[in-house]
Image (cartoon, rainbow, N blue to C red):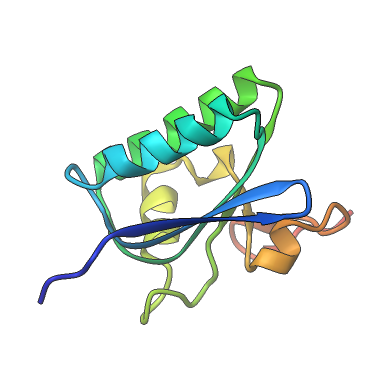
Amino acid sequence: MVVAFNVTGDEQGEWTVLSVSGELDLVTSPVLRARVHDAVAEGRHSLVLDLSEVYFCDSSGVGVLIASRRLIRSCRGDLRLILPAQGAADGSHVNRVLGALGVRRLFEVHPDLDSATDEEAGPLDEEAGPLSA
């Protein structure tokens, strides 16, 4: 079975939302890297990466996420990830990979687009769900 990789962009208020689907790996991660760089070059420093439809993520995909975080932070911007507990058919693969590598704590993670683009909503805790104030 061939899984197509796709990155689509949208605007949600002040946020640029890149929705990613398919496999984020050595072959496809440069596409996401380029899209993030393009958004930053256009002056968009509030970025949401919706990874809820990513079925597979390898170390190069994780590398792109970490590099994106570094780039956005260097611009004094904000990067948020959408990693729902259930996504991409059988659970958020990216969430599990980031957790296993111990880097999930580097990211502000939200369960859905509404939460990710809402200034009042808190990110998800790694274990329990939304963080309390």
